[in-house]
Length: 182
Image (cartoon, rainbow, N blue to C red; front, side):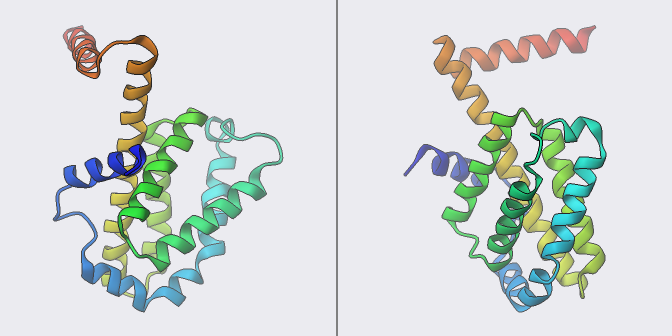
Protein backbone atom coordinates (compact mmCIF):
# COMPACT_ATOMS: atom_id res chain seq x y z
CA UNK A 1 0.00 0.00 0.00
CA UNK A 2 1.31 3.44 -0.88
CA UNK A 3 1.70 6.12 1.76
CA UNK A 4 -1.11 8.13 0.14
CA UNK A 5 -3.46 5.12 0.28
CA UNK A 6 -2.50 4.63 3.92
CA UNK A 7 -3.30 8.27 4.69
CA UNK A 8 -6.66 7.92 2.93
CA UNK A 9 -7.46 4.81 4.94
CA UNK A 10 -6.58 6.64 8.19
CA UNK A 11 -8.91 9.47 7.19
CA UNK A 12 -11.76 7.10 6.39
CA UNK A 13 -11.33 5.35 9.75
CA UNK A 14 -11.64 8.71 11.53
CA UNK A 15 -14.82 9.75 9.73
CA UNK A 16 -17.97 8.71 11.53
CA UNK A 17 -19.79 6.03 9.49
CA UNK A 18 -23.02 7.99 9.94
CA UNK A 19 -21.73 10.78 7.71
CA UNK A 20 -19.74 8.76 5.17
CA UNK A 21 -21.34 7.65 1.90
CA UNK A 22 -23.34 4.46 2.32
CA UNK A 23 -23.74 1.65 -0.21
CA UNK A 24 -27.24 2.92 -0.97
CA UNK A 25 -25.76 6.35 -1.76
CA UNK A 26 -23.61 4.78 -4.43
CA UNK A 27 -26.77 3.18 -5.85
CA UNK A 28 -28.64 6.51 -5.82
CA UNK A 29 -25.75 8.26 -7.53
CA UNK A 30 -25.52 5.46 -10.11
CA UNK A 31 -29.26 5.78 -10.86
CA UNK A 32 -28.81 9.52 -11.42
CA UNK A 33 -25.50 9.24 -13.27
CA UNK A 34 -26.76 10.81 -16.51
CA UNK A 35 -28.36 13.68 -14.61
CA UNK A 36 -25.15 14.35 -12.67
CA UNK A 37 -22.90 14.02 -15.70
CA UNK A 38 -25.21 16.50 -17.42
CA UNK A 39 -24.19 19.01 -14.75
CA UNK A 40 -20.48 18.73 -15.58
CA UNK A 41 -20.20 21.99 -17.51
CA UNK A 42 -22.32 23.85 -14.95
CA UNK A 43 -20.22 22.52 -12.06
CA UNK A 44 -16.93 23.37 -13.78
CA UNK A 45 -18.04 26.84 -14.88
CA UNK A 46 -19.64 27.81 -11.56
CA UNK A 47 -16.62 26.53 -9.65
CA UNK A 48 -14.00 28.37 -11.66
CA UNK A 49 -16.10 31.48 -12.18
CA UNK A 50 -16.33 31.78 -8.39
CA UNK A 51 -12.61 31.15 -7.85
CA UNK A 52 -11.47 33.49 -10.60
CA UNK A 53 -13.90 36.26 -9.56
CA UNK A 54 -12.31 36.50 -6.11
CA UNK A 55 -8.75 37.94 -6.19
CA UNK A 56 -7.41 35.89 -3.22
CA UNK A 57 -8.44 32.59 -4.83
CA UNK A 58 -7.56 33.70 -8.34
CA UNK A 59 -4.01 34.25 -7.05
CA UNK A 60 -3.49 30.47 -6.76
CA UNK A 61 -3.57 30.12 -10.52
CA UNK A 62 -0.99 30.83 -13.18
CA UNK A 63 -1.84 32.90 -16.23
CA UNK A 64 -3.61 30.85 -18.90
CA UNK A 65 -4.06 27.65 -16.90
CA UNK A 66 -7.81 27.81 -16.39
CA UNK A 67 -8.63 25.46 -19.33
CA UNK A 68 -6.29 22.83 -17.89
CA UNK A 69 -7.78 23.17 -14.40
CA UNK A 70 -11.30 22.99 -15.86
CA UNK A 71 -10.40 19.76 -17.63
CA UNK A 72 -9.02 18.33 -14.39
CA UNK A 73 -12.18 19.24 -12.47
CA UNK A 74 -14.38 17.75 -15.21
CA UNK A 75 -12.38 14.50 -14.95
CA UNK A 76 -12.69 14.58 -11.15
CA UNK A 77 -16.45 15.12 -11.44
CA UNK A 78 -16.86 12.28 -13.95
CA UNK A 79 -14.92 9.83 -11.76
CA UNK A 80 -16.80 11.02 -8.68
CA UNK A 81 -20.17 10.49 -10.35
CA UNK A 82 -19.26 7.14 -11.90
CA UNK A 83 -17.70 5.62 -8.78
CA UNK A 84 -16.88 3.21 -7.35
CA UNK A 85 -16.06 4.77 -4.00
CA UNK A 86 -13.37 2.29 -3.13
CA UNK A 87 -9.89 2.56 -1.60
CA UNK A 88 -8.49 3.69 -4.94
CA UNK A 89 -10.99 6.55 -5.10
CA UNK A 90 -10.22 7.70 -1.55
CA UNK A 91 -6.46 7.49 -2.18
CA UNK A 92 -7.02 9.69 -5.21
CA UNK A 93 -8.86 12.20 -3.01
CA UNK A 94 -5.88 12.19 -0.62
CA UNK A 95 -3.65 12.92 -3.62
CA UNK A 96 -5.89 15.89 -4.44
CA UNK A 97 -5.02 17.17 -0.96
CA UNK A 98 -1.32 17.01 -1.80
CA UNK A 99 -1.88 19.03 -4.97
CA UNK A 100 -3.52 21.71 -2.82
CA UNK A 101 -0.59 21.69 -0.36
CA UNK A 102 1.79 22.20 -3.25
CA UNK A 103 -0.23 25.24 -4.38
CA UNK A 104 -0.57 26.65 -0.87
CA UNK A 105 -4.37 26.45 -0.91
CA UNK A 106 -5.65 26.42 2.66
CA UNK A 107 -7.84 23.64 4.03
CA UNK A 108 -10.55 26.24 4.71
CA UNK A 109 -10.68 27.07 1.01
CA UNK A 110 -10.90 23.38 0.16
CA UNK A 111 -14.02 23.08 2.33
CA UNK A 112 -15.57 26.16 0.74
CA UNK A 113 -14.86 24.79 -2.73
CA UNK A 114 -16.66 21.56 -1.84
CA UNK A 115 -19.57 23.57 -0.45
CA UNK A 116 -19.77 25.48 -3.74
CA UNK A 117 -20.02 22.22 -5.71
CA UNK A 118 -22.54 20.76 -3.25
CA UNK A 119 -24.79 23.83 -3.43
CA UNK A 120 -24.85 23.59 -7.20
CA UNK A 121 -25.73 19.89 -7.05
CA UNK A 122 -28.35 20.47 -4.36
CA UNK A 123 -29.95 23.20 -6.45
CA UNK A 124 -30.15 20.95 -9.54
CA UNK A 125 -30.74 17.54 -7.93
CA UNK A 126 -33.99 15.91 -8.93
CA UNK A 127 -34.55 14.45 -5.46
CA UNK A 128 -33.65 15.08 -1.82
CA UNK A 129 -32.25 11.54 -1.77
CA UNK A 130 -29.73 12.43 -4.50
CA UNK A 131 -28.80 15.71 -2.79
CA UNK A 132 -28.20 13.87 0.50
CA UNK A 133 -26.10 11.14 -1.15
CA UNK A 134 -23.97 13.71 -2.96
CA UNK A 135 -23.67 15.73 0.24
CA UNK A 136 -22.22 12.76 2.12
CA UNK A 137 -19.91 11.93 -0.78
CA UNK A 138 -18.62 15.50 -1.19
CA UNK A 139 -18.22 16.03 2.56
CA UNK A 140 -16.26 12.79 2.88
CA UNK A 141 -14.09 13.61 -0.14
CA UNK A 142 -13.35 17.00 1.42
CA UNK A 143 -12.49 15.40 4.75
CA UNK A 144 -10.09 12.96 3.10
CA UNK A 145 -8.52 15.78 1.06
CA UNK A 146 -8.08 17.96 4.14
CA UNK A 147 -6.79 15.09 6.29
CA UNK A 148 -4.19 14.27 3.63
CA UNK A 149 -3.35 17.95 3.35
CA UNK A 150 -2.68 18.29 7.08
CA UNK A 151 -1.05 14.87 7.53
CA UNK A 152 1.43 15.36 4.69
CA UNK A 153 2.36 18.80 5.98
CA UNK A 154 3.14 17.26 9.36
CA UNK A 155 5.07 14.39 7.77
CA UNK A 156 7.04 16.76 5.56
CA UNK A 157 8.00 19.05 8.44
CA UNK A 158 8.96 16.05 10.57
CA UNK A 159 11.11 14.67 7.77
CA UNK A 160 12.86 17.95 6.92
CA UNK A 161 13.49 18.99 10.54
CA UNK A 162 14.25 15.58 11.99
CA UNK A 163 11.62 16.17 14.70
CA UNK A 164 9.17 13.41 15.51
CA UNK A 165 5.53 13.91 14.60
CA UNK A 166 4.66 13.64 18.29
CA UNK A 167 7.07 16.45 19.19
CA UNK A 168 5.66 18.59 16.38
CA UNK A 169 2.09 17.94 17.58
CA UNK A 170 3.15 18.87 21.12
CA UNK A 171 4.76 22.10 19.90
CA UNK A 172 1.66 22.95 17.88
CA UNK A 173 -0.58 22.29 20.89
CA UNK A 174 1.61 24.50 23.08
CA UNK A 175 1.56 27.27 20.50
CA UNK A 176 -2.23 27.06 20.21
CA UNK A 177 -2.56 27.08 23.99
CA UNK A 178 -0.55 30.33 24.12
CA UNK A 179 -2.74 31.87 21.42
CA UNK A 180 -5.89 30.90 23.29
CA UNK A 181 -4.55 32.36 26.54
CA UNK A 182 -3.86 35.68 24.79
